[in-house]
Length: 387
Image (cartoon, rainbow, N blue to C red; front, side, top):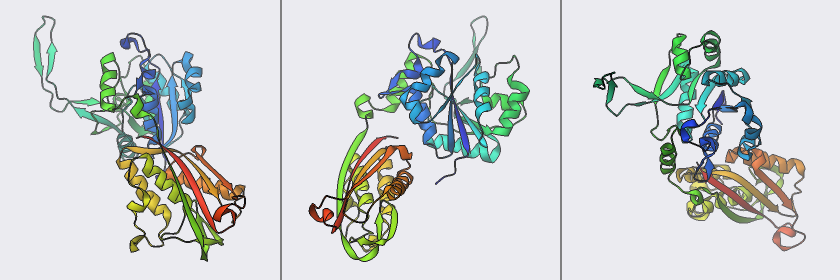
């Protein structure tokens, strides 16, 4: 798993004056608010250890109460009247080696862009994504005459903008409190003598400023509200006990329990989850993905099979959002510690907070092969959301 080494400061303290009424940050794109998209993209980046949301002082309680803010465990802080004051507030609360500053009004930033900026900032000190200018530039004088401007070497700045925390802290200490209004962190860093590396930006990573930008973002998102709803898949798997010891169950090993019979390691929990993921994504089932006659998968760790399934799901534009599993079997006894170990392992394999994983067990009540201790079955319900 990738080491998390960066804090993400999401700035959302603006007034939305140019939107002409509604708060742009809470306007929906595919059924989710703009700000939820922005926070979610930062939270999904493996390098991000902590989310810090900076908002207007009078909106701290409101923002902190939003379900998707609580779910992402974001720290909500009051900002200032200027962007640099809001960023300074977030910076003071950060503690990681690298700090990423992102506009809350840029909902479609990709995880790849976030990761590229974080890694470049860690390696080089500071970085930001940029896009080349494609329109011709003109300078209009007082007389109304439009004069050409050479656009060679000119780029549009995007966010997140990243820097090592010590460099950004030093720049803010020297220049952040001045009367000059810095339009972004890259400008402040350069003024402080810190070189900022430009990285390829993403045309989808637009800033929602005007009402028309919101429509553009919705078009880029490429889906309506119904298509943005989670997809759910359910599956059940059952395996009988075999003659050998070494039970694989839910991604953990129980060496003193009998092994389940199967072509792979027989882990019914991981098989059920994998099949549920495939069903939710509309992909062929596990048996068609991995044939029981394929010698390459004989005895293989089912975690590897689940990893391959998740790669297919991600390639279709989905990611796991939740998982719930019920295990039925008279043996072995699955007490609280074993169930919690399975829950933790499933969170790791699905890249989910453990709070989004449910695991429970039943003895089967002397009913069927499970109830008489001849087999174990597992039923899984998995929710997928768009990446």
